[in-house]
Length: 440
Length: 129
Ligand code: FES
Image (tube, rainbow over all chains, first blue to last red; front, side):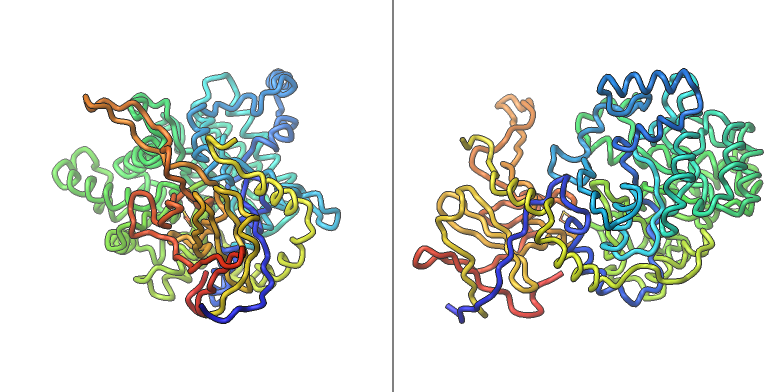
């Protein structure tokens, strides 16, 4: 037995979907104390969970019929009318094992704190994880490209872009956004590029990858040209689709998720490269988001191998497919870390030092805090700096200026705030009522 | 290494859990079938607050004699603590990841005496994140 210490013992509650982001991510704030030396940290992929903000987006629908339809459905109790979120995707939180996936249910009613509820939550996330900027993407809308209903993608994307650009971005310069392109309607995409491309805080244009559109179609060439002229990147954001014919044979979410997030980007990248789009738009910057990293060397090897034999089918290429891919940008999440040697080779193959951008994917279940990058043993300090923020600063034309608070201050402030907060007390009461299956 | 009295044994449910913060150290304390277990509240994956997650029985694949799967079922005797950051599941009795045991929560010495529960704090520098 050692010495008996007289210490203050503080109870910590169970973490639930109602837990304040600052408490949920408190351990990330402790790690953030070790990444103080990095001058800029940009999280290029974080998410809005639209459900609780859906009525605000619906309100901005510019089609009366769709608006009336959606509002009637909302009144009837439907959470996200007009969206086509597949029921199987509710498995994301693993039956509550990863509660933040089902949030946010935290409180944001402190009268001392200004701002839209979503803005408040994003500020909490940025401060606690220790990032300077966060780029926001939608979640359920990632599947909108498959919505068969007339005009839904067109009008919802416009409403979302307005919500983002008119309500959210003006409130916080650390929040950045991408214009959602309704890719099923190329001309509408062009209109949105013109209308929202120059808004402060808009750093690119996103195509949600889950769709069956050939990216090399002639109907997109004017759009690519316009985006190239803006100097901002075109961003393919991956997503899941359990309804894809092949994926219907997968009986577990893990299987579908492992393949689906890669699948659509594999297809789009293949079409993009084999049709020599980079030769036609040499200044167009392209960023591939949320497919992890392992798929890139796989595709590089497959395409290079076949290209040397079948050059006549890809006559627009002046170099190997992998050479074009190495000039594109990739986001880091979800970083496959179980095989470090493979990860190291992957980073070398994609020129991670100049082409990789840190992404958290918060608040999704497979998120990566910044220390996913800072703790990698094989990267040089300069490579970490670049991946964490400097590559994003170059791509998005951001000033290299620290905006995040000191993590020590974030931790200390929260400790003082938390003890009397109603949410903390409620969470403790919930914890005290812990019951296990089979227990009375 | 200092020991800290964290309260009455009778204040714990069985099965039950408390996560305590003592200085900069966070420790998850569990009671299961009358026995106490304690681990640092730090996940071996990315340092998440593993002990503050949901507690659920282990999920098993029920395979019949004829090798046909009868789907997934809950274990009747194994309870897991699940890290809320990404879902790593650890057996409460061993602190080990249920499938790949090299991933494990760091155990903390724990004992009861005179009706109280005592944990031994890890040495400075041993604990994180
Ligand atoms: S940090 Fe615990 S599962 Fe990832």
